[in-house]
Length: 282
Image (tube, rainbow, N blue to C red):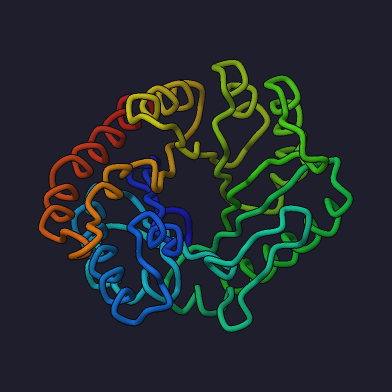
């Protein structure tokens, strides 16, 4: 499918639910236990049912998430990852694609394809990673679906990049990747100037990945970016830190409390984030 299925009036509000192994860990569930998988499906179904009407698109894994697709709002688009979900990631290596799930299956499920790319222009595997994504882009074009990159900038030597080094590497990475995808989801660039520079470099839409310990910080990140040209956001577990407080050692998850949280606090947050985008993106 095309990007237009993930947007509403040119604006994006994407809810990332595809890292179900992380969600299971967050909830204190051992995912290999069949009964826990049923509980996890119930939690994902509640998140989809409560929040998808207020998101322009969902990111779902091909197993647990996609199995709950009937809970999705009919107006909400679908973004599906190409990688094996839940697998341990080596940022220095090429992305590990699922052997049983790929561009063709994503097209058959009416989704937009997404690849999570750990990348640094200075890393040894940079050229091979670009070639791999370019080949995926060609196949997506052949099957008439669009490709999004969730760019994860990292340091190949392991040190923490300071703000200047991060922004310089981010801009160079965008210059190298902007012709081999249709949409970029980026870590928070940090400043209004950095966000505006990204917008000036790109002729494709970009979204900010919202990540912060407090919800008010997520809102500030979003405002900074959309005021400078971002077309919206993608958010995942940072939207629901309270979920981890609803697990019980003896009796398991409090599903009634989870449902209430989804239908009140989390729903209100999605509505507010979407409203911020609507106010700034024209």
